[in-house]
Image (cartoon, rainbow, N blue to C red; front, side):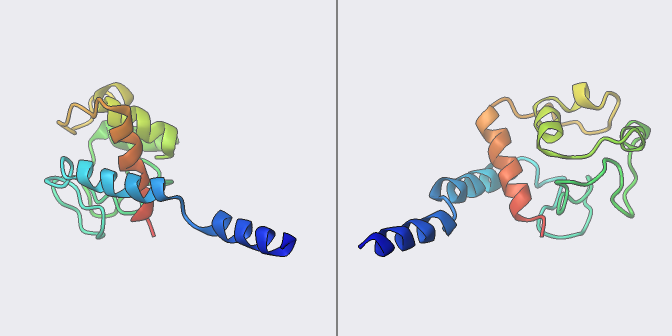
Length: 125
């Protein structure tokens, strides 16, 4: 009986949390606000650069995309799109990278930001 309990516990620990799956779906829904300008599931740039693989990427480095000087400078200054930096940027793009060209004012709901990041991480592979 002891081994059955340990085995079941190990299996449950390896399963992805249900909440994370819901966060991915919620993030995909919120990402629709971004989809007019950005792809997340392909490498193709639109009006904005592709966001596929953005988590962990240095700012301003997508090939064949014409970045603002501000975004290129941010990347040259070692801005990497990790979760804390994405959180700040998604909340207020102009505050995080002043003079960047993105016209979107930001996401105001912290749960939306968290969910979009979870979604972007899910399509980074």
